[in-house]
Length: 140
Image 1 (cartoon, rainbow, N blue to C red):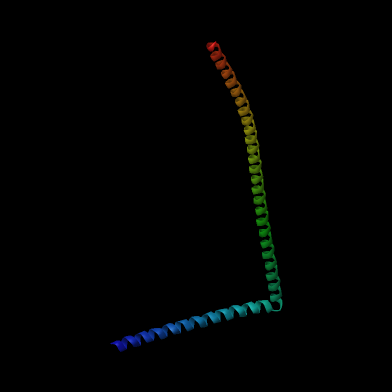
Image 2: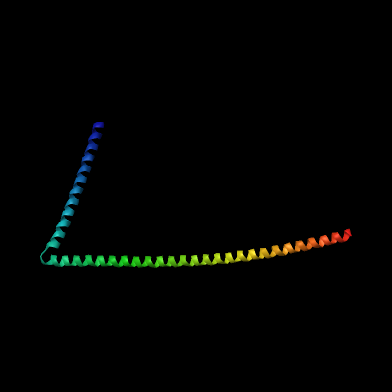
C-alpha cells in the first residue's frame, strides 16, 4: 500500500515535470515564431521597408505624444505653483496687515494708559490736598 502510494506520487511528479517542460517548449516556440515573424517583416525587401517606415513613424508619433503630455504636465504644475505662490503672497500680506493693526492698537493702548495714569495721579494729588486741607481746617 505504501509502495503504491509512493509510485503514484512519483508518477504525478513526473507528469508535472513533463507539463512544465512542455510549457517551456511551447513558450520557446512562440517566442521564436514571434521573433521570426518580426525579423521577416522588418527585413523583407519591399514590404519590410514600408513596415520599417511605418514602425519609425509610429515611434516618432509616440515620442511626440509623450513630449506633448510632458509639456502639458509641466504647464499644469507651473500653473499650480504660481497659484500656490499667489496664495502664500496674499496670506503674507494679510498677516503683515494684521501685525500692523495690532502694533497700532498697542501704541494707542500705551498712550491711553499713560494718559489714564497721569489723570489718576492728578486725582490722587487733588484728593490728598483736599484731605490735608480738611484735616488742617479741623485742627485749627
